[in-house]
Each structure stands twice: as structure tokens, then as C-alpha cells.
View 1 (cartoon, rainbow, N blue to C red):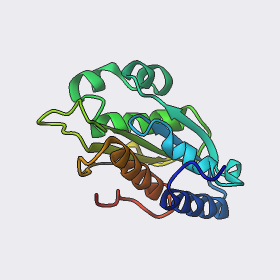
View 2 (view 1 turned 120 degrees about the vertical axis):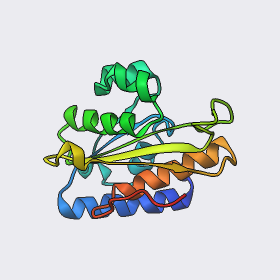
View 3 (view 1 turned 135 degrees about the vertical axis):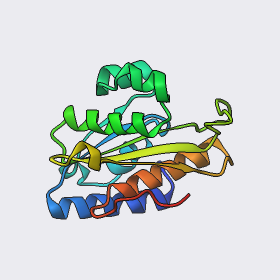
View 4 (view 1 turned 45 degrees about the vertical axis):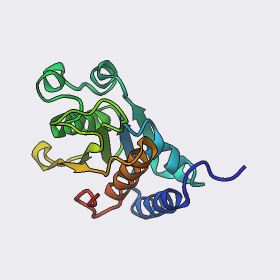
Length: 174
């Protein structure tokens, strides 16, 4: 059997593992719409255990609250697909691990579930570093073309992997 994921995602995961390993940096991922794709990509790379500490797949709002400590009022006020929720997910991933950096992803992969305010293809990301100030957490949204559920999830996984690279402090454009 060969790799389970597209080669471009595997290649990016390899870079993430190599660069973080060179710095002795551990990472944690909190995923919703990607359903573990980022963590799966990282674990496709031999030696990723030197870098990846944990991956939280918190698809349901209750899981975000229970596993990552996302306050219910954030979800009630802003929704699960919001920079506020991604920010809280990243903070919770750091709190529930000993990793140095966390990336969180939440979005609307479709084909259903989109609204005028939160259309299919809207994905939010957050990156937090241990020891950093809470207000320094990067939280951004991107609108990926609403082509297919698989394409949106793959694009979101690549964006999240890019954020895990040392020195990258913004989500790549869609």
C-alpha cells in the first residue's frame, strides 16, 4: 500500500516534521472540518513522533468544549466556525499538551451547512505558541472555492500544515 494522502500534502508534512525536528519543537493539532487529515499527514512521515505530540479531532461542539475547554459562550455567540472558536481551540490544545505550538482548524466543508454569513468553503485557523501572549495568537479565516468537500478539506489541511512551519505567521491565501 502507498501513502493514503495526496503527494503535495505528504511533501508539506515532511517539511513540517523536518523543520520542527531541527528546532526540537513539539506540535499539537486541534481539528474539526479536516477530521484528522493534518494529523494523518504528519504521521505518514517516518520520525514524526519526534515532533507530533497529539492531535485532537473535535468535530462536535460538545467535544470542542469537553476536550479543549472551548467556552460554550464562544460557540453560542460566534459559532464553531469563527476565529474566536479557533483561537480557543488552539489555546485548549496547548493547555492539554506539552507541545510548543498548536494549530486549530474549523470550517464548513459542505456540500451542505453553509449560510450567507458562513458559506461552504469558509475555514478558520489559529496558531498559538507556548509562552506567547493570548492576544498574539494568529486567528484568520479563508474562503476556499466551494468545489468539493474533499478539495476544501485538502486545501484546509495544506494551509494548517503551512502554519505549523516555523516562522510562518499567516494562513496562506486560498
